[in-house]
Image (tube, rainbow, N blue to C red; front, side):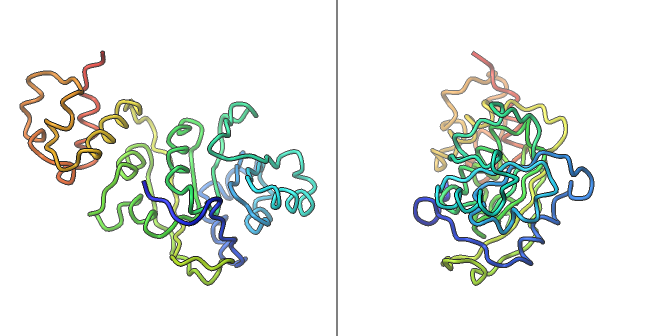
Length: 252
């Protein structure tokens, strides 16, 4: 798992042009202004001001920024939720269909993506700012550094690298560059998430072993175990290989 920065990890965006660019990149931007949108970690609200036409909810963990947001956007007062996004259950609102957007805190970059996967049936699109390294791995930009999250996200979502953001447009200024990516849910993906996640995380936790050894505790048909891919290691497998494995698991 890839994480950066200190707890809370909020480097506030201060460039309005970048904020507008992020919001305008939403594929739903001109299609459905009544769509539910959840903004994560808005800080002082630089993205928020451009999201007001939507049915907007805000999740902010820092009480200082919660107070600022309530004063700056009084019309949103009842929709500014003071809590950790990772503990937020949208079904309690209830929200059953929403866009996820934000200048995501570096410290929870990977966790945000696992949150997206957890609620993938509710979230058709996610767009936001990530550390550049994380963004490149998620969209598989270099076709080399595949990760657990690369496989899981790419199985259920289409990803697009939108643009790189200089560290000079944040306060405090981070040591790393950032990138904005778009993640749009694929239609009709019939792959069991729990099963796929178990296979991928198990294989990556023992990445030096051949798949036949790292996945020996997972049950497959004996004939299927003779397939050539079981003599490969993690870095030799494709996303399609992992989804194929998940389909062949024998449930207990």
